[in-house]
Picture (cartoon, rainbow, N blue to C red):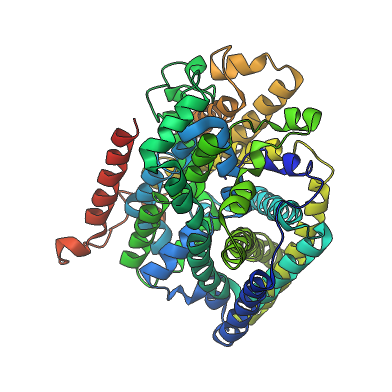
Length: 576
C-alpha cells in the first residue's frame, strides 16, 4: 500500500552486482526455499473445505493471525523502498509505520472487527454485498482483483531487480523461481500454508534485517553519534525530527505539511488500507474466535511500531556513513550510486559470509510474503466475489464446497501467471511506481468511506453505497489524470505551490474519501434504506456485540489496545 517508493527504476541503472555470495550463503537460501515448500506440502493435508483454503479453517490463534497480518505487509517494496525513503526524507518516513498504521490497526481491532467476524464474510467485498448489495460487491471485487494482480507483479519484478543488483541473478530466473515457489505452497495449502510461511518469513526478516542497524549503530557511536554525523553531513536539512518540521511544505525534505500527514495519511490512506484492504484483513478473519480476531491487529500493531528499526534506521545510518548518494535522475546522468540502493550497500558494508546469506534470505522472505499475500487475497475475492455470483446467475444453482476449493486453486495458478505477465510489463514502464501509489488512492480511500459509513450509519442505503464508491474512485482517477496533464494542478489539489509528489498522494486520497462520503450521504438521504432487521450483524446500533466484561482486564482487547496506543504517543513525543 503506502510502503512504496521509486526504487524499481533506479536499480535498473546498476550494471553489476554489488556483492557476491559464498557457499554458506547459497546454502542458507536453498534451505529456505526447501523449507517453505515443505510447509506447503505438509499443510495440504489439512486443506479440504473452502474455509480451510480461503480462511485457514478460521482456527488460527491470535499470535499466528497477528504475525501473519503484519508479515503480509512486509513485502518486496517495504525493506528496499522505505530504507531508500529514509535516506531521502529522513525520519519523516517513519510516519508510514506509526501514524500511518497504528491508529488504523487499533480501530480495525476494536470497532470494525466485530462486524467483519460476526457477519461470517469471506472478504471485504463480501461484507459490501451483505450491507449494500451485489453491485457494490462487484465494483469493489473487480477493482481489488486488478490491484492485487498488479501489486503481485510489481513484487515479482522488484525482487528480480534487487537480486540482479545485489548478487547478479538473472531477472528471468528470479521471477520464475520465486513465482513457482509461491504457486506451489499456496496452491497446496491455501491461506493456511501462506500464513504459516508468513510467520516463518517474519522471523527470518527480523533475524536478517536487524543485523544492519545493530552493527551500524555500533560504528556511528549509537543514536546520538548518528544524529551528530547526519547534522555534520547535511547542515542545511533536518532529517531527524518527526513533527517539528511539518509546519509548512517548504520546511522539510518531503514537501508536505502536518495536514497531509494527519488526515491524508493518518486518517484516510492508513485507515483505508488497514481496515478494508483484504490482503491484510483476510489474515485476521482466520482467527478462531472474536477475541482472537480483535487481538490479532493489536499484536500486529505492537510489532509494526518496531519495524522502523529494521527499515527506517538503515536509511538514517546511511545518511551518517554514506553521504553523497543521489536520486535516480542524477544517478543516471552521473553514474553515481542512488539512494535507492542504500540497503544492499549497507549489507555489503556490514555483513560477512553466512550473515550475508541470512540478510539475502530476509529480503527474499519479504518479497515472497508480499507476493503470497496478494495471490491468496486475489484467489478468495475471485472465487467468492466474482466467479460465484456469476456462476449462480448463469446456472441458478449452488455447487458443493469442493468446487470452490478447486476454483481457488485454479485462480491461484492463473493469478501467478498473470502476475508474471504484469511483472514483465513493469520492465517497460519506468513510472510504474507512481501508478502503483495512485492505485491505493483510486480504490482504497473511497472503499474505506463506503465501508465505514456502512458499519456506523444504518441510514446508508444500497444506492448510496454504490454511487459513493463509484464517485470516489472516479474522482481520484480524475485528479491523478489532471496532474499528469497539467502539473500546476498539484498546487490546487494539495493547496500549496511548495507541495511535492508525496503530498499529492495524501491529498488526492483525502479528497476522494470526502467525495465518496458526500455522495453516499446525499444519495442515501434520497433513497430508501434497508429495514433494520436486515442490518443485524452488519451495522453498529443494530448488532449486539458480545460483552467482554467477564474477562480479567489484562485479557480484554481494549486494554491492550490502550497499551499499544500509549506506546505510540510516547514515540511521537520522543522523536518530535
